[in-house]
Length: 362
Image (cartoon, rainbow, N blue to C red; front, side, top):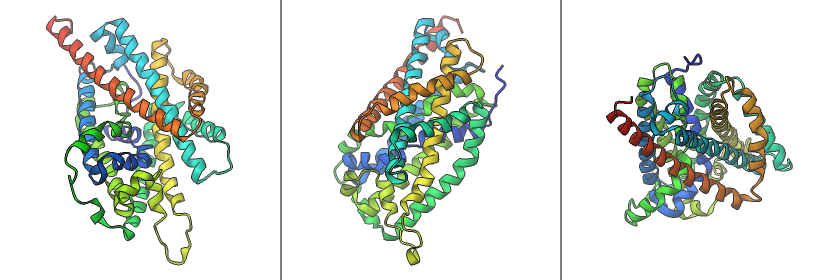
C-alpha cells in the first residue's frame, strides 16, 4: 500500500509542469522553421497525439492498482524485458533531466548571470531541485500546486503585453503551403510535449486513479493552449521567417514591450522570472522519477540516497555539450529517443496485456 497520495488536481499540475519547460523558449523557432505560419496547427496535432499516448499509458496502469510500470511491466512482458524497459526509462529520464538543466543554465547565464561560470549555474540549479526531491512526491506536488498558477499568470500577462505591437495578419494564410509542411513538422515538436510518460510511475500515487482520463485531458488542453498562444504571439510580433532565425523568440518578443517612462528597461528579465520555475519543476519530476525507478530496481524503500547519488551523474551529462549547437543536438536526440520509447512501451504493454488476458494469467 502506497502511503504517499496526491489529489487529481496535483497530478494535473505535475503533468503540466513536466511537459512545460524548455519548450516555451524553443518551440516557436522549431515549428516556424518547418511549418511557417501554420506552426500552431502542428502544435495542436502533436498535442493530440501525445494526449492519446498518455491515455493509453494510464489505461494500462489503471488495470494494476497501486502498481507502477516497475511492478506490472515484468508481469505483462516477462521479467527480463520488464526490467530492461524500466532501465531504458531510467536512462531516458536522467538524460532528459540533464538536457533541461543545461538549457536552463545556458539561458539563465545568457540573460541574467553573464559572468557566472556555466558549471556553477548548472550545479546550483540542480541542487535546488534536489532539495525538494528529497522530500518526496507530496512535497513536489504541493510545490507545483503553489508555484504553477503564479508563474503561469505572470507568463500570460507578459505575452499579452507583447500584442501591443503585434500584427495578427502575420499568421495568415492558413495552409498556404499545403498539408505536407505540417506533417513533416510533427516530429520536431516531440521534445516539447515529452514528460507525460512519467504517469507510468506516478499513477499509483493518485487517490482516484480511475479519474486519470479527465486529469490528462485537462492538463494537455492547458499545455496545448499555452504553446499555441506563445507561437501565435511570436509570429504576430516578429513574423514567421524571423521567428525561424531567432534563438529563444519568446524572450525576444518581450523586448518589444514598452512601459511609460521606461521604468523597466529589461522586460525579458520578467519573462525569465516566469520561465525559470517552469524549467525547475520539469527537472523536479524527472529527477524524482529517475530516483524512484533506480531505488525500486535495487529494492530500496527510500529514494533519497539515490536522488543524491544522481547529482554528479546529471551534472557530468549537463556539462558534456561544448556549445549551444551540441545542446540542440542533445535535445533532438532526447526527443527522438523519448518518442520512440513511448511508442514501443505502449505497443509491448498492450500486446502483453492482450496475450496474458487471453491466457487467463491476469
